[in-house]
Image (cartoon, rainbow, N blue to C red; front, top):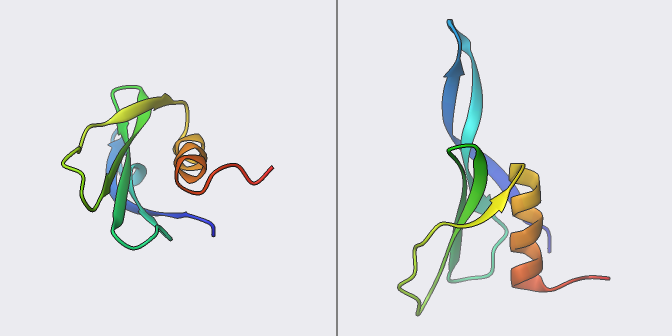
Length: 82
């Protein structure tokens, strides 16, 4: 199963308010009872993964892009396909 990103927060770039870049995504395609957010925090992307039975809501990881964070989350949840 493939996870997908949906933009949920943006940041304006310079004086052009019409050109915003995504800074936060929600993740869909997760198993039941799981939820995740991927967010640009300072200069890196991090994951907040929550699941039933866990009180943890910490931001983890240090990724260069939202896509690499998503790939790491997918591997964590579903394992390596290779």
